[in-house]
Amino acid sequence: MRVLIAAGGTAGHINPALAIAGALKSADPSAEIHFAGRQEGMEYRLVTQAGYPFHHIEITGFQRRLSLQNIRRNLITLWNLALAGPKARAMMRQIEPDLVIGCGGYVSGPVVRCAARMGIKTAIHEQNAFPGMTNKLLAPDVDLVFAAVNAAAQKLGAPDKTMVVGNPVRPEVFAQAARREEIRRKLGVGDRTVILSFGGSLGAQRINEVVAELCAWEQKNHKPVLHLHATGQYGVQLFADLEKSLGFSRGENLVVQEYINNMPELLAAADLVISRAGALTLAELEAAGRAAILIPSPNVAENHQYYNALELARNGAAVVIEEKNLTGQELISTVEELLSEQGKLERMGQNARSLSVDDSLDRITNRLISLVRQP
Image (spheres, helix red, strand yellow):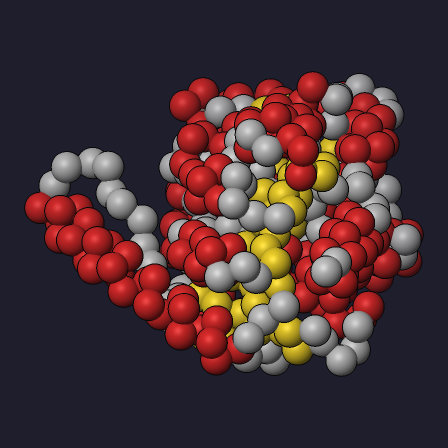
């Protein structure tokens, strides 16, 4: 079985794609799995690190805001679109895949559409509650549509071939969650509440600013908290400056780093997570069973992170604060309220855990293999 997976743009598209690739390889060790994506994108680094063959296709999105720079970008996008079809066809002839899977990002569009037109078996996976434009356009043409939640399934417009399967989560998230007490002992947590906060690999400025105010409040009021915070690439200096101006410091109760390389372990240790609301993050919160304060990014297509976050909020697993309403005091008040009610975080975590689709990868893999075997 030869499989081509197209995914790009963000870790929220790429990591589920890698999880599906790993599950297919486990189910069929002889499977040959290839990836398509942008060489300049995050997918090139993540896919090649995982050891899969990578095929370059350049595709970008249109910029809606009118400016000279965006006009130039849109001309490049048109040029890339014109070349994408022939490149995709050449890719199909080279790989001769039995199955092509789109996991989101602009790059999925021309690759999956080309495969469908050539009669190759195709599938897509939509991670968000509000589907992206690429998947909405592809849904009528593919053989199988996987949706993370019911809300997405209803919006994709292909109910006869859509399965709600959740978002595939790395097996280590489940494994580390089972080691929670051991990990907390290793971190020296004791009786403290563990707060884990992050805004993504690049770093979200507003999250860094309000989390800094929260850290200052925790230390000024001697809260029994171990706070673990990731600044992201562009937040390193900002957070260091905020430490000085707000008068708090790193130490026994505050650990700050640029990027979290051991996320499954820290999720296992955490009592409360403060983060964006990307689909993969939420799936991991559900798998680990963690309470959350979610701050959806306002800079994503169709405001989809807000709709993702609402799924957890409606089920009592998270508090949602939109960035337009986000202040340091609002975050502090929310944390203070959650900490003051005994058992609140534990109940929210249990609610999150009840939303997890633990067998998501099994559902996806079994259906894909059945699709390939169909005459």
